[in-house]
Amino acid sequence: MRTLSTVAEMSEALEPVRLRRGRIGLVPTMGAFHEGHLSLIRRARADCGVVVVSLFVNPSQFGAGEDLESYPRDLARDHALAHAEQVDVLFTPSLDEMYPHGYATTVEVAGLGEILCGDPARRGPGHFRGVATVVTKLLGICRPDVAYFGAKDFQQTAVIRRLVEDLNLAVTIEVCPTVRDPDGLALSSRNAYLSAAEREQALSLKRALDAAQRAAAEPGASVASVAGAAQRELEAAAVEPEYVQVLCARDLSALESLDDGEALIALAARIGRARLIDNAILKPSSAKIETGEKAVGFDPARQMSRERSVR
Ligand code: PAF
Image (tube, rainbow, N blue to C red):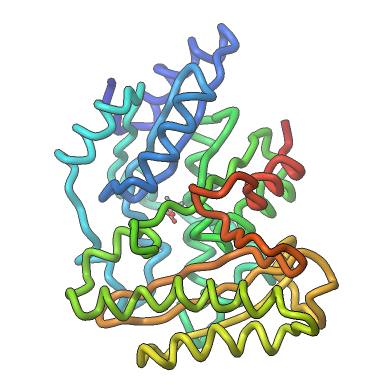
């Protein structure tokens, strides 16, 4: 594995791969690897001849007062894990390399970047502007055939798919299933902030998704009944959500009825220092619970990414 930190080194390393028409897979990360990251890397390893993992804690996606300074960082551990997963290139650019003096360009996905987590009352549109900008830059630097993202960050994947389509970027976006701990907690680098008691409380997010699934399968289920079922689970655990929303899974638009298309339930809550998000695709007419996580056979997020892929 090569560890490279400049754009020039990346060009030099990847140009021969492009010339021989090798398939390049990119896994963009902010480090502090957990099984979720490793599942993306393994997927890229299975699909692509050359696997690039970028590791950059991107300041532009953190708001004032957020956890940029304390965000978990362990380069030595991440390096060892990437090496063990047979990553070809670990890209660890500095802040100056990504945003040199005079840097002036941002990428903003209107609408999609301004709802849910991007609502001005929450993280605000600056968060997804930061994500969209850095992902566009990473796609430009690595020019991968495929880039891999996790379904836990469903809104992020919607923003990225939109920008790839709008900017005619020649890359396939693969959205891979959420990976969970055995007790159901979706893996996140920010889980490290949770105390034992807070972690117990955090399990209510998955219970809320499961309650929403059950409510969606009931005759006469509505957007309100599904959201209410999730809300009650959170209340029972004394978790005050930032949002619990049932939306169209395709474009995150508002849904009047569960029959109006594939529905997504998305939720966010602050538990102690951790701001946690989770989501599930709702399957109203099916007895089987499908939450898009790894154990499930059909993965709607992946299906969507295939349908919308550029290549
Ligand atoms: O999901 C993340 O870790 C980040 O938002 C990403 C996509 C690496 C951009 O900084």
